[in-house]
Image 1 (cartoon, helix red, strand yellow):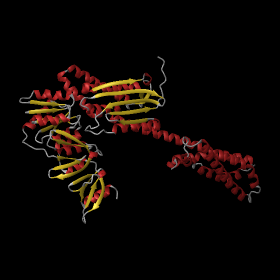
Image 2: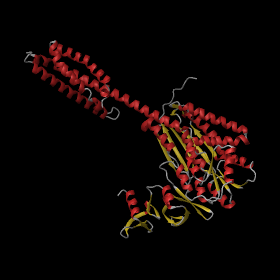
Image 3: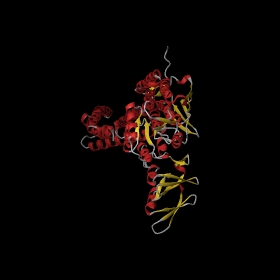
Image 4: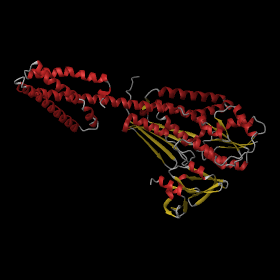
Length: 347
Length: 246
């Protein structure tokens, strides 16, 4: 349904716009065809009413011919053709009215004929303007919808953020340390608090820098390091240029959490998590690799990955990628995010 | 009282050790860091109690439960949320939610001291597993005991299962494994689109069926890839057809 007919208010406003438009049209043809005020009104009122309805039709045409995916030639051709047809029909109707009135108003048909070109041009122009207006409205609606989608995905991500399993296991480690090593217990409390506080703070923002995300990841790994001890080894190789790149908040940390939960935690001897950050032509490429036991008891739950994929899609469409490869004993997730580097602030 | 502790995290084991050391008459027979070790330790030391983590390398806690002597008292020690633990409440096992205090730990120990000799039903592990399993996820593997060793059968490699009294005979890669479990509980744990109960006594991997031939008026025979013939009942024939969409 056309948005104008969604509410009475919008419909009345739309009709009100046609009062001055009709008046301008009338003024032009009355001058061009030397018509009296009454003659002008008799012709221009039905013309304006018809035009008001016809100018709602681009709603459907514009959606069938989206700006982004339609070729320029086709776009211009189709709309010009439509404008010419609309103009011809409106002028034809106006002429019928003028002809039928020429009995009571002698010579009206001839005088009106002089005003035909002006009317035709004006109608075509008004129609083309309405097409432009419709594109603006459609564009605004689309961007509002994708914003909504992105926000929803963000909320879901936040809810999934602090995994209760992680929290309870960490508290259990702290509980163990309070007896054997109170100083380390305190240290771990602080590390856990740092991680929770930072993820809450960063989670409020849609975008953060890659270095902020990696800082959060490091805080998370600090906590896990206490739980897993030597079983958790880390190797980090990030190009310094990645640091200032903008990335969606809390996108990478869940990937690292997956690597711990489904990789390291299910390996007797643990292993090394390898993280690579590179700037490539298409954007920022982040790779995380972890050893895993292909015969491990718990099946790998894809919820975390599905969540990341959804958020990427809501925000970047097809421009971002998430690839998962599982070889015999190595699990690799590669993330590619388009980059709009932050302006370098003068220090 | 003889105790075995099974948890892959050093610190998690140390809490248990700390609490246990304060109790009189306790002997910690073994500490294990994965499921295989836990099964082995129970067979070797014949403990009275095992404190068992759920998520461990090699075998998870439920799989360990399936493979150990059913008279050993089991206390699950886990960070699973309260909601999932309702199933544990209903079952005859105790559980400790990490982190747990000394009072809660002592209560669990008291419960075990005063319990009368009970033997867990063989379906218990499947029930617990079903309770904590997210909707839409099914058993990807089956663990069986082969003497003192543990054998893991991937669900995709299972040809069929046949009910034999209290056991199921599992046929996989040319070998047969016996496991104490009912065929009905195995059926609920496996993916319903990959395994079909063609007969009261038979659960078949649908990918292994090459054809179904009529036998008598109301029975059929399923011929498997390796030539094995499996009886198909009227109800089983209907289930098979609705599964392949005929």
